[in-house]
Length: 544
View (cartoon, rainbow, N blue to C red):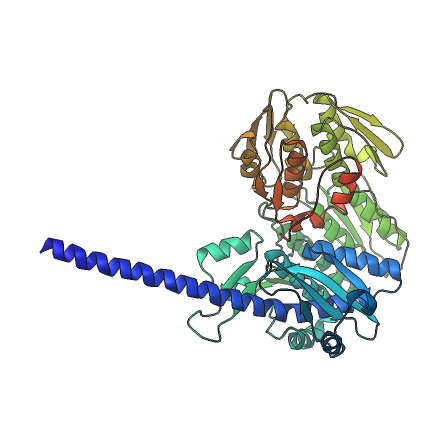
């Protein structure tokens, strides 16, 4: 009896497995079809937004710069071509004149050529795009958001409706609370990843739903100037890199101290000051660069005097103060932790040269040290990098300072050192990951302590895949230097983490592939070109 039962039960189990396999295979085929359909539909709207960008730019230089920007965003070459360079068939030319997207190549291949005509222009956009990818979806979302931001707030709903006609499928902006997601999908969005789902796989008309998290970490910085200028502002809660929480309480409490009313609703911050902002004394409980910047811009147009205590002292704060003063603001105390702002009635335009990016410069210093190179950086501010320079010298690296230059040279392995991140003028948190990569090949053991963000060791597992010996306990990481790192396939989680993997790859044996490189383009311009000029073998080959 038991034998018969086992046979029957086993047969049923096998049958279920077969059915499951067939179902899975069927879903995969359907997904391939839906992905292809989505790619075509996405292309229409995406290339319309690309074309709008070209139309807004005059001259070859501006258009070439836009092409480079698009290429970085999509991880694929985007160029402008004339009809003679494309060899258009009569059918393709007709479709392009009708404002349609033309896809050339095998639809089943990994890459396909996409063409689109720039309206009222004899030129065509050409791109070689891959299958539907996270980077493509993210880049398209960024184009949509930039398009909406360029429109007045009272016309954004209509602008979104107009875009829907170009895309061929609905585009919506929703707070995360309204999304029906499982736990893993929620976690992926929290990690700033794109999520692909099916809108009810049991229906024949089911489609691909693409969820792209909207970065809001920088958007909060428009709250202060909008509030001061218009008496109200509505901004999304911060997002951005998955390196820890980015509380907005410092920003909101500061605005309330100036007389603003604050409400939180549906993932948005709404602030209002219908009678204007009033100067006050604001003491930050902890140092915050963003909150200091936000308050400075709001207080510049407030009535009376505002005193900001425990203000951030980063060079970028000083640069903002200089810019605001050039525009007519009255701010004193630059370079100290106490800033005094005497409000003015209005600001005017001004010419301002942005200071060099000290984090980018410091990153290339790490790259030179780990590869035992000899590199001179130009257009830098050595004074802004004193904390980085001091630690590099402690590790045995030669650093020579010029007027606007830094020479970094290393012969042999660096020596292990202890590092603790601190607000400026201490060692910057944005350099911790890059410094860790260098210390992974150091002679001896190093200890890194992260005091700014609670979750900024997400690059550690990826470095360990390359052979690094790193152990993390809370906010402390112990790095034991190894003789060699080995190339591997790794994945970036945030901007600085992605750069730490690039630095490690430069010194590793063999080939390294870094996924999700879209993080890089937020902080490093023409990275491959710059590193290639000093001997690196680096190439952007994928779309992730």
